[in-house]
View 1 (cartoon, rainbow, N blue to C red):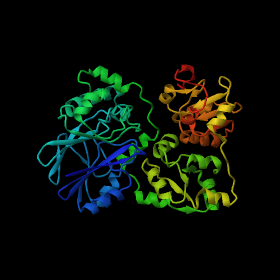
View 2: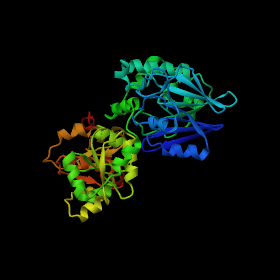
View 3: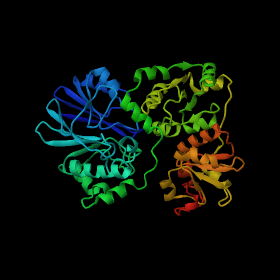
Amino acid sequence: MQIEQIYTGCLAQGAYYITSNGEAAIIDPLRETQPYLDRLERDGVKLKYIFETHFHADFVSGHVDLSRQTGAPIVYGPNATCEFDCISAKDGQEFSIGNIKIKVLHTPGHTMESSTFLLIDENGKDHAIFSGDTLFIGDVGRPDLAQKAAHMTQEQLAATLFHSLRTKIMTLADDVIVYPAHGAGSACGKNMSKETVSTIGDQKATNYALRANMTEAEFIQEVTEGLLPPPAYFGMNVAMNKKGYDSFENVLDLGMRSLSPSEFEVAAEETGALLLDTRKNGEFAKGFIPQSVNIGIDGDFAPWVGALIADVKQPILIICEVGQEEETVTRLSRVGFDNLIGHLAGGFDAWAKAGKEIDTVNRISAEQFAKEVKIGKSKIIDIRKESEYCAEHVEESYSKPLAAINEWVKDINPKEHFYLHCAGGYRSMIAASILEARGFRNFTEIEGGFNAIAKTDVPKTDFVCQSKVLK
C-alpha cells in the first residue's frame, strides 16, 4: 500500500493517490488530470475509484474528466445528487482497492453530503482518514457555505458538524492518520495549520474544536465566530462540481490561442473581456496595457482571481510571461474560469514593440515613502487582512482589505491623494491595477509593502483604532 499526498500550494489543497496490489484510488483530484494519468501509467495500476469528500466550493475537481478518461466510477457520500453518473454511497459502505478498503463515514456539517473516507489496511486495521473539509489540522470546516442548499442556518449546520466529529471522527484510535483536503491559506476554514498531516490523537490534544469537554453550544459559538464572507465564486464552483463542466483539454485549447497585438486589441474591444496580466508586480508597475488587472501567477493567483473577478463566465484575455501560458490557463481552470479568449503572443513586450498605448503605476520605495509621508496628514490605506493590520501597522493608516475593494472603492475621493500598501507588494499591485482601471490616479503604491516600511523610521503601532478598520 502506498499513499501520496499531492499538495497544491496556490489553492492550499491536498489530493490523494492511493495504490494497493495493482489498483488505485484518487481522492479530491484537481481539474487537470494528466498528472494522475501519468502516475497510473508509471505505477502500472488501474484506477478503480475516484472519491469526492463533498461538492467543493473553492476549486473545480477533476472527477468528471478523470472518470471519462479511465472509466473509474465517482463516489460521493450520502445525500450527493450529481448530474452525471456517480455513486452516492451509504454510510458505512466499503470499497475494495487491492488489499485495502475505503469505508465511507458520513460526516455532514460543512455540507450535508460531506463524508470522511477511512482507509483500512491489509491487516484490517484503521490506518488513516481522508477528512475533506470536515476536519483540518487545527480547525474544522466552516458551516456557513451550504446554508441555502441545506435549508439550514449556519448554527444548525455547526451543530450537525459537532455530532459528526464526536460520533465518527473522535471515536477513532489516536494513531489514525489525518489527511485533510486543505491547509493554511484556504478560505474553507479560519484557523488551519500550515501542517498538512496529523493524527487523531494530536488533533484531540491541539484542535480547539475537538476539546473533550466542549459543549455543543460552545462549539457552535467558536466555529461560527469571526467567519468572513465566502468568496463570490464559491457557489459557481459548487454548481460546476455538481453538474459537470467542459473538458480541461477544450479549455486549454481556448487559452492557448495566440493573438498578435492587433488581434488582441480587436478581441478586447469586441468581447469586453477582462485583460488579466499575470506578470510580477514590479514588471507590471513599469508598464501595462491600459485597463488590465494584475494578479501575479507567482502568488495566491487562483484564489485572488476567484475572489476579485467572481463571475466564472467572465471572458478573459491573458497577458503573461512567454512560456507561462499553459500554467496560467491551468490555474484559471482550477477555479472554473473557462471562458478564455486567448493570450497575447509575445507577451507585453510584443505590445510595447507594436507601439500600442501603455500605462504605468506610480510606485515608490519604502525609503521614499518615509521621506514623504506626514503621519496624521497623509492618507494611508493598508489593504492587508484585518488580522495583519491589528498585529502592527503604520500609525493613522486605514484598514481596507483587498478582498473588500469593491465595497471601499466607492468611498474614495478622487481628488484626495493616498498611499497604498500591503505586506510585500503583491496585493497592493492588484489593488492599484483595479483602481487605475476604474479611473483613479490619485494614489502612490509602496514597493515592498509593510515588510519594507517596517525597516524605516515610519511610526508604527500595534494599537487598533477601531474607527480606521473597515467594517
